Amino acid sequence: MQEDLYYDAHRPPLLQHQEATDAFRGSSPPVFRSYNTDHEIYDPSYADEAYEEAPLYRSISTYLRDSFEDRLTFVEGYGQGYGMCAVECCAESFPPQLEFQFELPHELFEYVLSALPSYPDLFNAMSVNRHWHEAASATYARRTIKVAAGEDTVIEAIASATPGDTILLQEGVHWLSTELILDKPLRLGSTATGNAAIIASRHPSLLRTRATVQLNGLTFCRMGDAEGYPNAVIVAESGALSIEHCRITCGGTSATTIEEALEAFGGAPLPGESWESPPPPACIPLADEVAGLTRQGPQSGVWVGACAVVTLRYNTIACCSGPGVKIYRGRLAAESNTIAFSRSGANVVSNSGRVRLTDNAIHGARGDGVSSWNNSHIALERNTIHSNLGTGITINTGGGSVAILENSFFGNTHTAVQFATSNVKHVTIGSGDKANDWSGNEAGGLQGLHPRAMADNFTDVGLPQVPTSTPTSSAATDSSKYPARAVSRAVGCPGAVHQVVDGAVEDAPMESDSSSASQRTLGRMSLVSHGSGRSAMSMEM
Image (cartoon, rainbow, N blue to C red):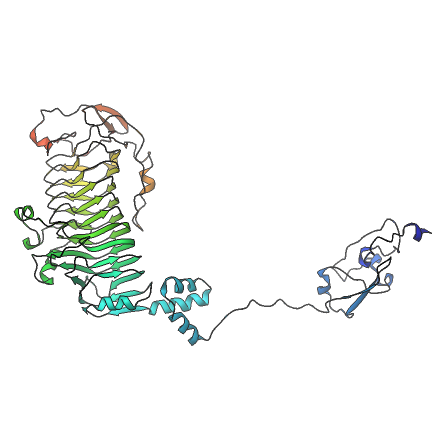
């Protein structure tokens, strides 16, 4: 009766391990239990006698049993539609299979790696596992092409190189009959010390880069007066170009041999330092020779294009027909270079570019030391700018930004810093620990700023950073480090100069129109008296 009372034909049968040992079919309510994975401890209710057949456990505990004799266990079903079912259980546990590892014989694996280009395939292979990393690194270390001196040997080596290779030039002159184009990632260096590997040509440009390229320890000498666009020894058209420990010059028409052109480096100091005595007069034309130049686009040392990012470190760029470095809408970060003796124009010219100059020696130009045009964003810090026939720095047009911090100016023919525009939006002139020293510049310090009102602090507008150097972008926006800094706008009317002394803003009187003639440069009024040794001014224009 009790069995019939609780019998439900629609209820699926319970597995044996889910019922209590003292329960029988139809008992109500059913009592469930879990399987104890510890087979050595048995509860009385788990006695084997309670089961006519071995229980079926729906869990992984089956794998833990020492033996499992029965391969098939039958569970008797009941109720309509349920019959006998057979369930096959695992007799024993199997260890997990090891992950498949693809390994070729050593000789065959090296052959496969040797067929891969360095970039990106060989570099990607290095990241697979340790074995691949060691094998690929060994292959890459052997992938170095040594080039003997001769005509067009460099061009042939670069044509056969794969992306990411290293090309080392041996000592001597590597003459180019045409322009050397680097349109794949490469490293170009020298096997000899002292810049003994020389790349020379009479083509308008020696080398043009369109990829990520590194140049190290080379001498670049352009001969003749052939014209092209852009007219430069090294043209960074696109990509990232890094130039370190190199020498760059152009002999022009004054030098008839490479040896004579290389006299431009006679007495050259360490990069970042100034010449004690200039190179031979043949490398520096006289003023009347410069006035007679009619050629358009004089030869530059390094030309930075709109799609290029260039890093210059520890280089000497001397005696170029035009600017030593010209930035045309590109980005330049220059640290610890010597840029000197430009024969025509400024040593550094920025045209709508973003430029950061740090710890450079810029001197001896036939024009300005640094010239900024067309909304350039330029920052100069800890540079030595001296002995230029023009000004130290000239800001010709506005719209960009200017930051001048902790630089040294002396011996320039005209003023240290000249603003020739009335619409510069952002100007930073260092003060305190970041003040500029123009005490040795007899023509004056700062000219051309007519302040109007104080505004927000200077903002770093994406100026390029020099790798491995001390970061400056965060400092450029930290007002606690530069309490005397302000953003400036030039206006065409006189007013009061806001002078910052120890972070406090005070009104300072303007220089009167009756100031001495030495306070005027090219008809522009100086706002700083000649007696002020170090600048302590940050002005809003």
